[in-house]
Image (cartoon, one colour):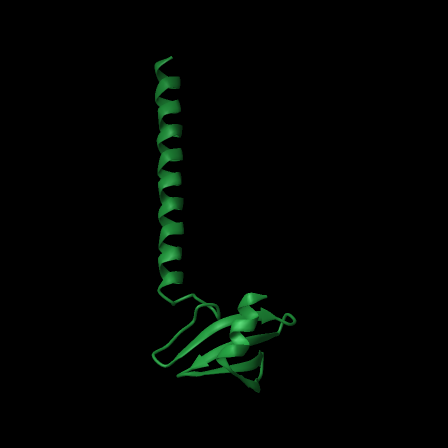
Length: 99
């Protein structure tokens, strides 16, 4: 009986340590993502530019609205290139927000 009790407490302790480790790992990954290290395209911003929105057109191409200073640009980003499509006005964005 004593051997079973110590074995069960050992299992419980390893389970708790595993859960704490996983929670810590998720917290660390989220911290890296919110700080921009693994942010990908969404929310990516610099000192003078910011990606406002994006939509995947295919596995290898994405359509993005990028704010550069006070201008809004519509660009297509693919594996090998970035193509400028249009310059958007603030009123165009307001219409998009309204849906």
